Structures are given as structure tokens and as C-alpha cells.
Amino acid sequence: MSKLLVAQSGGPTAAINATLAGVLDAATNNPQIDGILGGINGIEGVLKENFLDLTELSNNREKIRILWQTPAAALGSCRWKLKSEDEDAESYKVFVSIMKKYDIGYFVYIGGNDSMDTVDKLSAYCRKNGVENLCIIGAPKTIDNDLVGTDHCPGFGSAAKYIATTIAEIERDCHVYTTKAVTVVEIMGRNAGWLTAASALSRIHGAKGPDMIYLCERPFVLEECISKIRRLFEKQDAVLIAISEGVKDDSGHYISEVLQPADADAFGHVQIAGVATVLADQIKKELGCKTRAIAFNLMQRASASLASKRDLLESYQLGSMAAKAAIAGQSGKMTALRRLQTKDYAVEYELVDVSMVSNREKKVPLRMIAPSGDDVTQEMMDYLLPLIQGLPDISYADGLPLHLSLYE
Image (cartoon, rainbow, N blue to C red; front, side, top):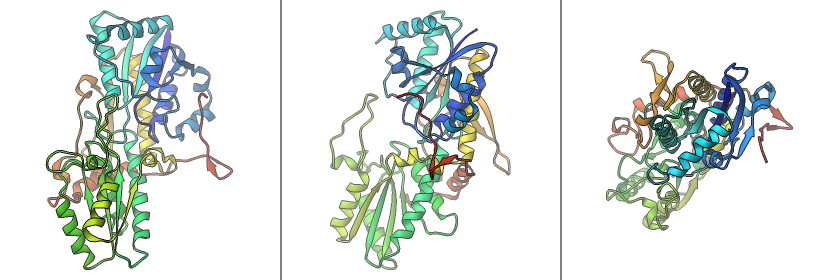
């Protein structure tokens, strides 16, 4: 018998705690598990031995149910980059010594691309150095939907539902007045435009939705955008644009770089927020009309009240599968979803080699982008629609949803 360790990393989502709940349920009362620990603030906290005993929580069904509906990472997160063994062999040695010190035989890491890179590096190190009785499994998470090896990512469906719903509400507001106006909505997506594509779902009940949808995968041409706005203004007063934060021009430069310096985070990712403001300012200069810039920012990943029930259920199952796989002796794998080619939506759960996932990005295929470059195709709509289905059964008190705090 040994302990299971679980931690969360990267950007929070509305479904990451459903994955945690799945891990806890699978490990609870398993004869091979004599305790469950949570790593506070991801691998950074693990290396600092910052642990929380989750064993008692895992047996409390009411708290697990509240955890399920709690947004953001209940165990805290980090964006700490684990260097290669050649660059920082000491961190790997410390990790293994900590696992032995606390009698941890199983480690489930919930996160996105960089987190899967951590799973890959640690599991490879253990194999190379003959570290036995330590199984490391990744459970996917990212609203960006850019992980390869899985049809879609936990957290994406809920974020897509929030975006589609909010865009539909914004569009209603835009058409109240007769003043010529352009509203630009900035949606998360550094190099993949899946989330921005979800804005098209605002049309499914007959509404017009965005007049233009710009994804990261196609170069943005300001002149073409301005020209289309002029044409639209000949027959309508309001124009609504949905645009990915990471949209680039035809030279490969982020549109937002004209507004702010290209600072980078710990992973070397350029900080690129501000494209809506940049574009709105440019449109105002060119056309002299009223403009408004809206950035969904954190709301699109934190809105648990608009979560997709299907997203939460799949997230839970992927977490449960990750724990079971680790306990069964699997390591260096990530749990994943494979969509079946059936009339009605269906998926199978599987394990994929995490080395095939880390440091790769799944971008929107060009066939899902309209030839005009400012909209999506029906294939994209068919891909997205099943992922936002269902309303979770959320518990409320005094008019507000209940959330669970695991630590102060």
C-alpha cells in the first residue's frame, strides 16, 4: 500500500475540480491506497512539500459534490516550468526523495500542455533511473482545447458555453440603438482559435451572432476588416466582432504588439492581452464611429454557473480513469477522449503516451474556417455543439452557488 498524490497546474477552469473529484472517488477505499495527498500549487508546491491530506475529504460525499461545481483550481495552481534533467537534475532528485519520504506511489497531475510536459519529464526520469513503485499519469485540462491526443479538453466545453451565451446577450444589446457602432470582443486563445470559434454557437437559435469571427490560424488583415464594416454599415447600425487574443497580421506579429511591449512569462509565452482595444481604436480612427472593446478575460474560464454538464461528467471520468490507471501500474500516460463516428455523440476513454502530447499544439484545421477568413464552417459547428450540452445540478444557498475551499 502507498499514497496517491494529486495536483493541479496551469490556468483554472470550471471543470478542473470535477477531474479532481474523479481522482478522489477512484482512490477512495481502494485497497492499494492508504492515503490521498493534494499538492498545493502544482509541481512547485510538491517540490516544497506543501501537501494537504485529502483522505477525509474523499469520504465526504456532500463536500465532493460541492467540489464538483466549484470553479478554478481548488488545490491552487502554478506556472512553474520544470527544466530538463540536464539543466536541473537536483529538482528530479528532490522529487523522487519526496515521493519516497511520504510513501507516494501514484501521482496524478491535472493540467494542460506544460503540465503534460512535466508528467513526461518526471516519468521518463523514473524509467531511466530505475525508480520503481512510482506511477505518474496526466489528466488533461485546458479551455484552449489545444492538447493533441484527445478529441477535446476538459474545461473547453464549459468555456465555449459561456462564450456562446454571453455573445448572444451582447448581440441583443448591440442592436438596441441606431447609432453606428462596432463592438469588438476579445476571447482567449494564444495560438489556437477554438474558443473564439465557439462564439458562432450564439447563432443556433436563429440569432445573427458575430458579424466577423477572427481566429489565430488565419492572418488578420485590417484593411479587409474595415472594408467589411463599411459594407455592413450600409444595411445595419451595429457590427459585432469576435477575435482571438492571439490574432497575428500577415507578418506573424501579434496585433496587440502595437499597444504594449512583448513581455513573456516563465514559459516564454508572449503576454498579448489587448487586441480588442487595439482593433477598436483602429476602427474608430478609420471610420469615426463609436467603438467598444470587451475582453472576457477570466470570466470565460471561471463561470461555473454556465458550465456544460457533459464537460463536467467527462472531466470527472478522465480524472477517475487517471487514478485507476496509475494504481494499475501505468505511467507516462495521459487520459484522453476519442469521439466515435456515430450518428449520436459518443466518446471512448483511452490512455495516450504523454510524450506524444507535451510541447505540441492542436490548432483549428483550416477546413473549419470559412474561405473568407472571418467565420467558421458547419463542420466546426457540428464539432462544438455536443460539447456544451446539459445543465449541471448546482447547489445554492442564499441565492448564490456553493463553492468549496480546501485551504486558506
